[in-house]
Image 1 (cartoon, one colour):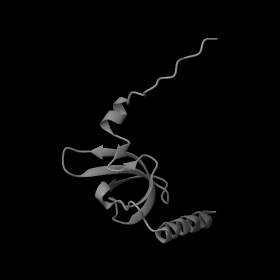
Image 2 (image 1 turned 180 degrees about the vertical axis):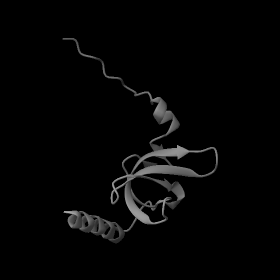
Image 3 (image 1 turned 135 degrees about the vertical axis):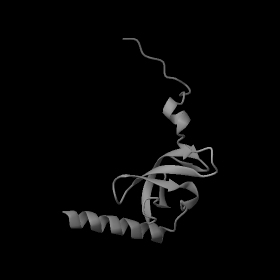
Image 4 (image 1 turned 60 degrees about the horizontal axis):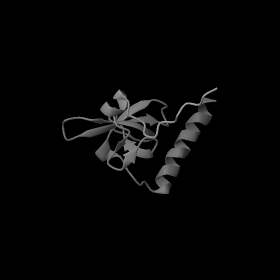
Length: 102
């Protein structure tokens, strides 16, 4: 059976061209603390992609770890290097919510 050649450089898909996975030092998969646009509360989430509008504001689509759904965050309201104490407090909240659901 013949082997397929591996592509050396992956062409970005149409989706990745419209919604990049890296922006302003942040990239897909980064766990960040952000302020949700929906209710203005801070939460912990993992970045999926960015929305770059022609306006000056850029947004990120984030999978909220506490809620388990997609949320939108303004890039300028993302805490890039949160203190470990702050991250630990969010993980404690998440684990206590999951325990109470059982």
